Length: 382
Ligand code: HEC
Ligand code: HEC
Ligand code: HEC
Ligand code: HEC
Image (cartoon, rainbow, N blue to C red; front, side):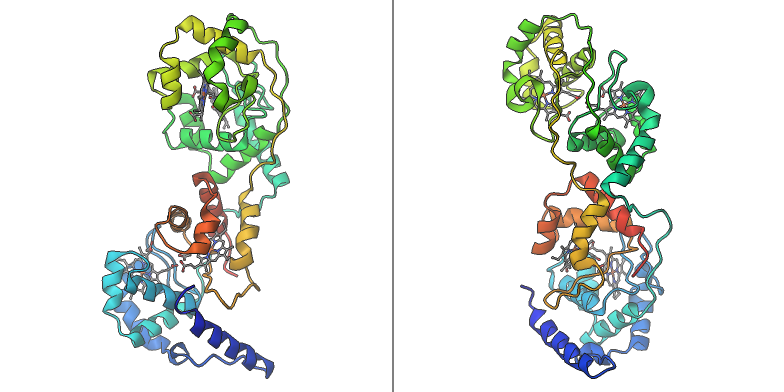
């Protein structure tokens, strides 16, 4: 529990009592007497280089303050000052502010009109929308991966029925260059975070077509050689873990290329490297043939959430009409997406301490975070 919570409960109870008689009365607190005009003078001298006099963050990692809730601004300032939120320069700056200046400058920024989003479209996608958007984005990929993700060209990986989380991670790693492949790096460079999620949602849900793959290897030998692989890739390549790709029914030539990539280290995975180093090219061919001959069963777990679906959970606290008297919940719409993504990673990774947000952030992948950040950044202030 935060130390300012009792005060807040009292002020909110007072506010609630006031409401019964008609015009809502500002609670009696230092903030009630705050002087926004005096706060503007402080802001001009000490904050405007970074937060502007209109409350707009001047850099992607500097948050907008305009129209933010007063209580949240005060809380944040005190937390930087006490070191609870770590930022050496801000800690120094805010400890130079008197209590009056602090309340005044918070009142000044809280009173400014909120910044409208820079543009761009909110990711208002439900799973159905995501599927439709993913299908249309996948047109650009069809020549190589097939319209429905069932690739027919030798050497091309099939994507249909692969776990969504694996696809998201694979696409993300091409986009940020951690997985190197000239064609795929170019393909993904133009794809934004939301489209990336939509593509993964689409391919994961496509039915797998059994194909008569032409493989030269010996499937019986391949089965024997794959003994060390089932622990992660499942029986006959039917992976159950969402982050491990299914191998069943995959193109045999692609399987061999990938195994070589792990063996020579161009795709990094220590356990696989150790297992594959002793194997000859012929043996890799056997394994490829074995997995290619299996048919992938589709008992897909439902796709993980879209940005919109996440936001429905976030809006239990961050939405309108959900004031919770025991918590000071900031407004997050229209904030810089870079700042939002940075903060969410900090909560998830325990670098910014707040137990609720840490719990919320726990299951989020980097790709989820990017998509959620873009979603909120594009929403108009409410
Ligand atoms: C040198 C640039 C700089 C100056 C000057 C500066 N800030 Fe900031 N401010 C930042 C950055 C960067 C962050 C985000 C830090 C983080 O990630 O925790 C921030 C965060 C904040 C936050 C937290 C907002 C949120 O959404 O959580 C508040 C409130 C704030 N600043 C108020 C002020 C006030 C008031 C002043 C003047 C007294 C000021 N800042 C001066 C750069 C600055
Ligand atoms: C010109 C052909 C081509 C096009 C177009 C193309 N890809 Fe690929 N894709 C490949 C090849 C080749 C690989 C294997 C690369 C490797 O070994 O890393 C691949 C790999 C992938 C993988 C990784 C599969 C796995 O099992 O790890 C995904 C996911 C993927 N592509 C998605 C896409 C999407 C989405 C698009 C469209 C935006 C696209 N690709 C467009 C050729 C293409
Ligand atoms: C410790 C768990 C583990 C073991 C054991 C393991 N794998 Fe993997 N495998 C993974 C993971 C995780 C990935 C995805 C890694 C990545 O993103 O590059 C993967 C990826 C692959 C891929 C690439 C598939 C694609 O769609 O791009 C192939 C092929 C593969 N493994 C084959 C094997 C074979 C063959 C063995 C046994 C000799 C094996 N693996 C053993 C965890 C494992
Ligand atoms: C149970 C209530 C609750 C839920 C659910 C919740 N939050 Fe929060 N959130 C908070 C509180 C309280 C804070 C203020 C914490 C602090 O002071 O660090 C906060 C802070 C934040 C901030 C920091 C804002 C800033 O200006 O620095 C972001 C970003 C955020 N939440 C995003 C989210 C997202 C995205 C989700 C859904 C994945 C979510 N929250 C779900 C209560 C919640």
